Image 1 (cartoon, one colour):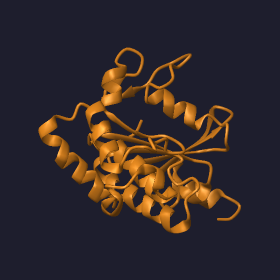
Image 2 (cartoon, one colour):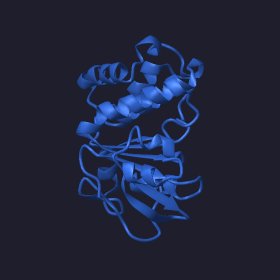
Image 3 (cartoon, one colour):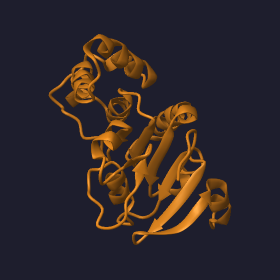
Image 4 (tube, helix red, strand yellow):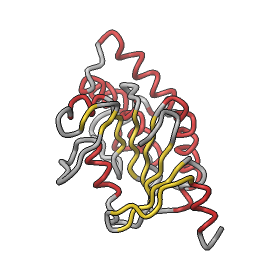
Length: 203
């Protein structure tokens, strides 16, 4: 269960099942057993409703390098069925929110890794979904870029349900209210993030 205003971290080593779980919640992979509900919609029987309720930032931020930033956001907006009269405002909102003003007319191919991460977040936000899923959102970023991503997640959190995955304990404390620890596809801990940090050998 996850409530509005809560940031949930999925923590575990590579291969623990974090990304697979997120992909099942987002209806990218069918579950072999069980089910989940997103905003009251079942991932098995109502996948289209679930997808419309979610903004998904996939690991490694796959983007179309031959597109410009504004062109890509317009493309995603169309895929998300944003009406044409509302498209400009939706693009402007995420460009400002993710601080993309300086690169909005640039080719994605020429963007730094930090700007690519911001753009991947922007495409997840463009339809203003109630649920956000960020898979390893700070992976490969430098410390300043990581701080920018964390800050954006914190700004979004009061009005969203947010799930993010990471294999680094240090990512949990600054960002998450609650954490679930995965190991070999099973939950080993579910609780307040500070409690987990206090239990760690490094304190």
